[in-house]
Image 1 (cartoon, helix red, strand yellow):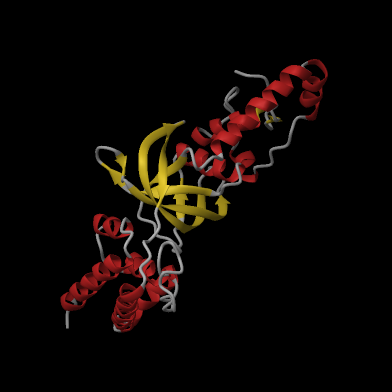
Image 2: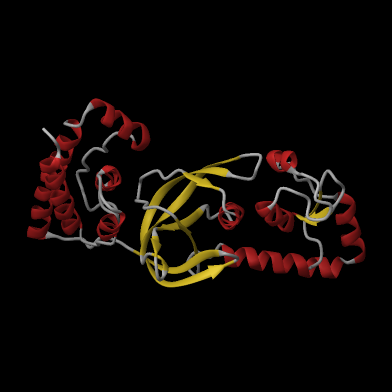
Amino acid sequence: MRLFYEPVATPCGHTFCLKCLERCLDHNSNCPLCKENLSEYLATRGYSKTLLMEEVLQRYLGDELAERKKIHEEELKELSNLEQEVPIFVCTMAFPTITCPLHVFEPRYRLMIRRSMETGTRQFGMCIAHEIKGFADYGCMLEVRDVKFFPDGRSVVDTIGVSRFKVLSHGQRDGYHTAKILYLEDRKVEGEGLVELLKLHTSVYDQANHWFTSLKDNMKSQIQSHFGLLPSREPDPQASPSGPAWCWWLLAVLPLENRAQLTILAMTSLKDRLIAIRRVLIFVTRKRPR
């Protein structure tokens, strides 16, 4: 109900603000006015500005258009401030350095993904659901690498885990969840603690490698096709704020419940994480049928 901004015309001849039309088409692929089907228009996403309308606005409503542009830019700036508010996708477990392909079909998440692209952040948080709070207190930031759109508005989003976070407060914006967060980093150790950590790191990596190589070929190929090869052991396990990549790869492929994965994701001690992984490896190795 505001002044036209970035006006576009549909094939049926009706004019809307680009952002307003996109949000309408998130819910229904018909024209909001005449109800003509716009599936093909939606599939090509061939939105082009209505130049005549832009010219009329600039000539007769120049001051109002300048104010409208200022409001739009302020809204965009607010949406891009990930220090203040992070959009949250409530779905599955995600881990740093691990790919997380998503099938997006809900209108609220279509809007959320589009905004992350428009603002240039290309990032949002991923958390698993929580019965009372809506989503868990810990999650992982995902970065969008590619988006493929389908004619009905659905999309497949290729993302990869970037960094872990703790949720400080839960919120909402336009139907999707948001949160204020605190990024997590592993606590570094030195001296004797570091010597012990390096020893443990080598030991658990060898144990993980042995477990993976002993799997049946069909299971190994399924894991590799989805998650890639087991990452190599880093010489300095404390180099990354989230620790070694192979730990997260292993957590993603091990048969663990989400709650157990979440507990390990939240750890800021690499030593504790390695001990937890070792326990899981011992358990799955003993449980495997001979």
